[in-house]
Length: 336
Length: 257
Image (cartoon, rainbow over the protein chains, first blue to last red):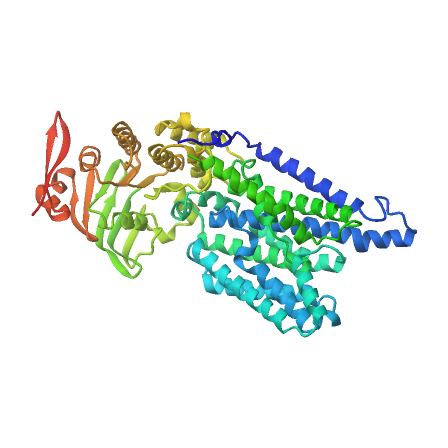
């Protein structure tokens, strides 16, 4: 059997776990500080003292915090779902929660609630994510293998997509349609600390649940029977994964809109560095996701004078070629 | 520790698969579960490992019903090697074997000296030490089978349950595997294996349960169970247990008309 040199030794690319996590934490912190420092008024925020505080607290800080939180939530959920479903192609949207959040926000726009109350958008998104999670749990059950969860997620996603199309179709007001489409592209701009307070506790609760599933995901490498014989409670694991993803990704999507590819690519890229261990991949992907999204947001702000891109579009633009590269690399490895 | 089944009845997808099975596997013994394909061997092992709900009857581990054991406590004394040999990620061999230490570790704890010793002994017992650094996706099927048994050995169980661990192994490693099982039994532990090789069962196992269509055809010592009439009833073949150079061998001659 011929295999690429890169995989001839599993430990070849791997780094000691503590060194990996410490390195990624340093990179994430750097990206966060960079995100605080970059903006049209410069690193030192050249403005009157009053405006300076306002710019820092109302613009820079919420944006940097949300970038790190949402990126971390997406990276971690992607790693957790890939580990639980034992499928490297899984990503957070697979369980239908981001579709539900998008639908909730679109309904808030459609009903005109977003014009009355600024927080109607994220609240609608949270409600949508919650309904989607309950539907997935009800449909897929709390027991059973990955397949029922994937199918339930697909069904809920398809339903959400259909209802979003319906809302766009029925929208009499073209401005509302544009707002819906723009919202679904995902953005970190113009979010306030209120958005952070709304999303952060839910995201952190989800992160806490997902990080607790690490041992179970390691054991699931050997399949469900072997994992159970190692003392793993499969029903508890499923609850941690589904509820943790729903909280983290649902809250993230509710405040920023749909941001794709981060949850797919981050665990993929880090897997060799984490020695392919699904448990270690969880904290690593959370830190790397935070670093990636914060950095992407900085790049976006630097490019803003030239082109005003939404971050969901940007991650898709860099994510898709990366994915093509992954496919080509895999093809080389599997070539006879 | 004694693992025993009493009047066991179990279903798979509402279809009865096991009917009224009695079994007692004691320390210092290797028990074989044999029978034709679909006889219920794997279902019985899964029920004994507590992975399958039992409709009637009881499974007792150390005289306590399995349900009275906490998951972790049970995993510390009972290891199970599934028939299906899938490993989902390209972990290195040593990391796979190290998974056997999970029940003994506090979440988040680093590998202790006892963990490292158990892993090293398990790798050596299954003759896979030289593969320790290789990704499991890169090794052969027989090597993977040994790695997966090593994972269960690293668990240092009092009761070891293995579902067709010898399938796909070359003759030398089949012998080594069963010598290892004999050694484990001699150290005061309990071994239960499902297998198809009747000669291995005759040579290395102290007790044999012969299943057919979910029912017990015969249960006892190799000499009584591997009787021509039992083998004819269970497998539909003419077969004979005899001794060649002092080693018991089951010779299968022909299908019954």
